Length: 511
Image (cartoon, rainbow, N blue to C red; front, side, top):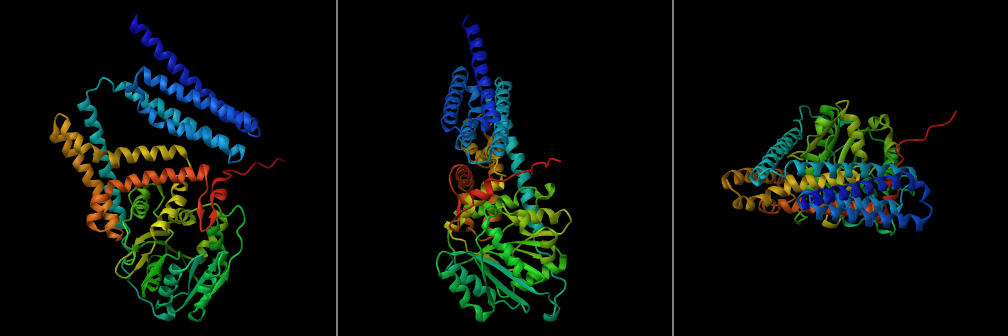
């Protein structure tokens, strides 16, 4: 009798959970247009569905927590999705599309995780942890291989031909600046100290609030620095992209270098960049090292570099790219549509790199003995950059945030937790070997990036690797919540409006 009631309880709770999921989808599909203008009805619908979602999950956990605790990990993302509907910050068609897509992904993932838990419920703990440890080991080894290959591939090709001053093409270095002080001065001093003969330096004052930035720019006029007065960006433009567009139209150089004010160039760096570009005739992005004057433990910048280097990006034609310093022929930018084709992108260089790499016209290189470029980002700058970049890097998709978080927890943080757990399991030696191998692979990947780019000392890199991945998970969610429910301020401007209100397809024109 008790077993029969237990079985009935399972079907009742799962049926209730499924009914709530259908109701939630109905609200996203129909309510975005019919309830959107009625704030009271919209919030009542959201409140009712939220209570029902939580109640359904509690019921399933009370039925069998061993089956449903893993799917419960995705519950917060369902709640964030419905809160996104309640916030109603996007146009109705866009909101309907993103909420339905996230809902379908999360609900499907919950069903798959529950089914997997059910299929594995009779598997012994030893076998289950053995499968997990083996997958972790294979996964991190694959990522380690990709990281090493990308790092080796990023080694600048040896310059086979050196050019006389007369044979070098004209070069324009383009620097957008807004409310800058010391960093801008250091950047300009490093640029004017370069030995490149046909050089123009253009700095755009991007509507700075104070007078300090234009004063700094004009103070270097006698050194050849040209002041460009920026205009207020249109609402549908990310301000930095609009600044780049203005600068490229003012530039006269055959080759353009785009860089931020937190970039320093050694005296021969510009010549080395141009000669490297002439050797392969490709658009190029340069991975800098940290300036010796910036002594901080860097989690955020290390993880930013990590995601560019560790994934097998070449396989998917999505090459690594950084905004710190990238160089391209002016004609190529014109051919690719200029920045008007990426008005709402927080990483326009990534768009150009994807188009160029398809034609074998892009390369990513790291700093070496001759190509000396340094980053001077402070912790605050790194924090702001991570918030601005992280969520858009995942295409502003809530379900990708969930997937990335689970991936990092399983493959990057899980092995560190598994090491002490191995002493509590049978066959301790085998489990310890697998998890120790995974930890070693993660440490090598983190060490490779953090130390080789001088972001952290060797000892700090070895001791802080797991904290770097924890910091990345935290910052990913901070970025997501800021974009979805708050503001993302960059140089005093909120970039949420142009970034989040993207129209994926233009409406068809009726004949």
